[in-house]
Image (spheres, rainbow, N blue to C red):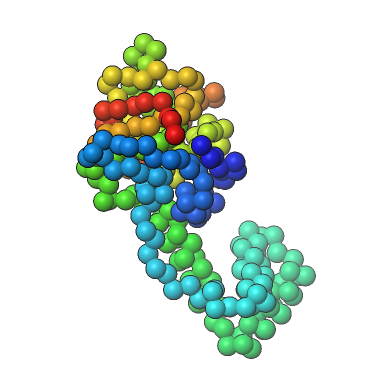
Length: 231
């Protein structure tokens, strides 16, 4: 099992979710599932991002640096923390960019639109999985027990998620119910789960050291099989 050693904060996680899921939240081999179940990896839970015309791909390194100076100066000025030196640098950067025919205001507006689009895509769920019979690996965060067995839990892609580090995007958390129950070995027991998946954003209360936290969830699974993870 290959884990992501450095999961990041929520905003960064949203912007990079697609990359993170592809490059290593969980990399596992796929043992045979029942004939009707589709074996999923975590990246399958993230829908394909829409194509975006990114004007910054066409800018030079120097142009990006100058634009960054202007953007940072506007940000700190809005917070009342600007300085004469910083403003002078921004004015010079603006003169250089305008001399090259670049529309600074339009570029910065597009920057915000691209960030918003990427964040929305990172949180979006894969509607094609609604009603699908699936099998996938993950780590268990128990929610409810019947004796020693967990009958309800969150399935997450890496150790530490939701407790030691901020939760991943909702489309990287699956709420699992399993009436038979599964005996867990503490937090983050690695498992395979199999059953019927449904798509729908919601929240589930998770007990933490300092209280209870509401964890956003993008998928639900009525499990018919929960078994220890084996390659």
